[in-house]
Amino acid sequence: MGTIGLTEWAYPLAESLLAEPLPRRWKHSLGVAERARTIAPILGADAELMEATAVLHDIGYSPELVKTGFHPLDGARYLRDVAAADERVVRLVAHHSCAWMEAEARGLGDALEAEFPRESPHLNDALCYCDMNTTPDGTPTNPVDRVNEIAGRYGPDSLIGTFIRRAEPEILASTARVLERLTTDKRQPM
Image 1 (cartoon, rainbow, N blue to C red):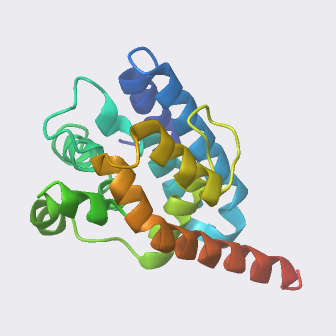
Image 2 (cartoon, rainbow, N blue to C red; image 1 turned 180 degrees about the vertical axis):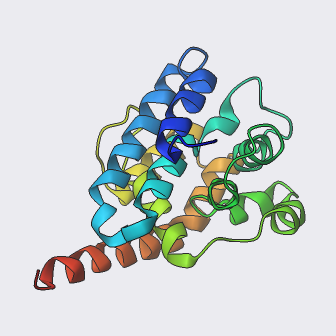
């Protein structure tokens, strides 16, 4: 990456993989990055890392990256093997929004865990918060509506529909922890 920052590197990469083949997914990714900027005060030195990861989190949906059909794993492998990305970005993409539960349902849990150690819980929570507070079109929403939208889009009996309902309690707990940190941060004197 040289002397350019993480975000200056991440946005064009994500755009090149998503904007043309998947314009709605690109809008979602931009919205997730926007959410990341709104929680920057609780991220401190990791704010840029989170914004870069947010814009990259769904690149595994890009038709040119699909290998397993499990987008967190496909995206993380590309970031590690081709893009030589920061390992923290790679780990966050691999595990975003309770990916381990979907990986287990797909028989890919061992591969995910063996290849990509988890990043710190507060950063995993932050990325989940950003993703689950963003609609497919990139606008703000809330985690309950987002989970319902995902289940509705894929169908309740689909692998994704079943996974998202199973993950819902952890998604809600994860996003609640971020909200608590935001509330606590606002109460701190300047």
